[in-house]
Amino acid sequence: MGKGDIKSRKGKINRGSFGASRPRKKRNVATRKAKLGMAKK
Image 1 (cartoon, rainbow, N blue to C red):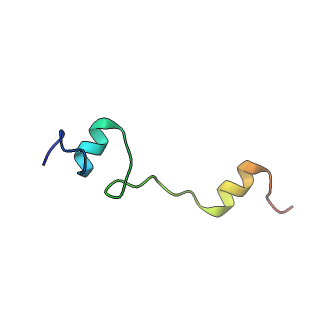
Image 2 (image 1 turned 60 degrees about the vertical axis):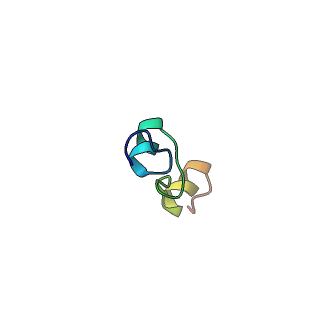
């Protein structure tokens, strides 16, 4: 289990992919709404 292992975190970092062992970072709701122009004024 190292850089060549696709299922491990190290392997996913090496390949630049995401999955169960390396989920994408979640942005908070306020940031998402502000970007879409849905923020309350």
